[in-house]
Amino acid sequence: MKNIALIFDFDETLVEESTSALIESLGVNVNNFWAEKVQSLLDRDWDPVPAYMYKMIELSLSSETSTITKNKFIEHSKNLKFKPGVTQLFKNLKEYVSTNSENSLNLEFYIISSGIGEIIKNSSIAKHFTDIWASDFEYNNEGEIIFPKKVLSFTDKTRYIFQISKGMIGEKFRNKPYVVNEKIDNKEMRIRIEDMIYIGDGLTDIPCFSLLKKYNGATIAVYDAQNMKAYGKAWKFVKDERVNNLNSANYTVGSDLYNSIIMALNEIIKR
Image 1 (cartoon, rainbow, N blue to C red):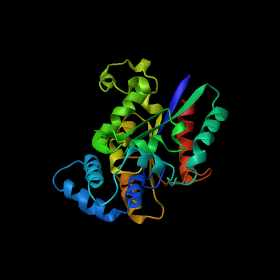
Image 2: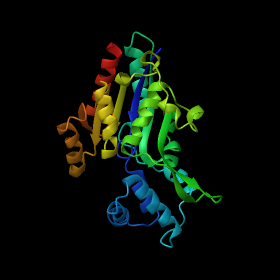
Image 3: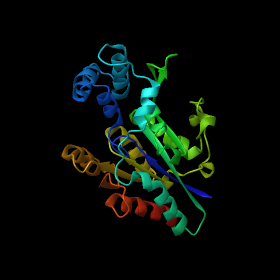
Image 4: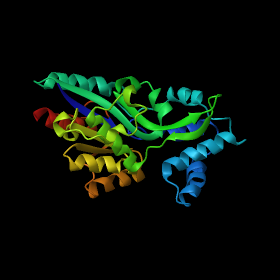
């Protein structure tokens, strides 16, 4: 059986920005959090992902809001605002591949995100994914966030492209961070990179875009159609030849994005 991997970023790709929504739900000014608190660390040469995670821990320890806990993440996951068509997307695409491929093809879904893993893994769509990798916190005995446990940013994300390719997925590989470096013959790869499609919206997705482009995989950038600033950022991906296509984040059947995914799947099916 030939496997196909459709890989997504999460925030602003499949859902509205979940971390900002969580911070806002705590009564904190979101613009101030990103533009001042997180930016103050970026100005001191911090990387963006550990910077926002550290500031969330600092926020949790302050008197500004209640503590941030694992349970808060889980509760927040129930209130995510999905992009149009997302909840039906996985069933629709599985049916399409099943109906339109003569050979036995298996379509799998993955998430590689710089966002908070506890939110993603407890979302209503998590059940559709073969594996999910994201940034995570360590918790104390009361379930409060105390330290960044896993940080996914920029080239960190490409590690999981190779794990997907080598079949290093699922619980079996959770506590084996070095196994991805093992050499595997190309013919033994579970999913070739050319049989992958990557969909993302932001700067942290660029290394994954570049990796797939190098090996003839398909890359699609998405943006919020109501946000011209987001469109401008995404358009630069096209200008810099980072992606094959650019569409607004609308996964409804018949939309430009849905059709782009179908065209990418068709290319893989033909091979």
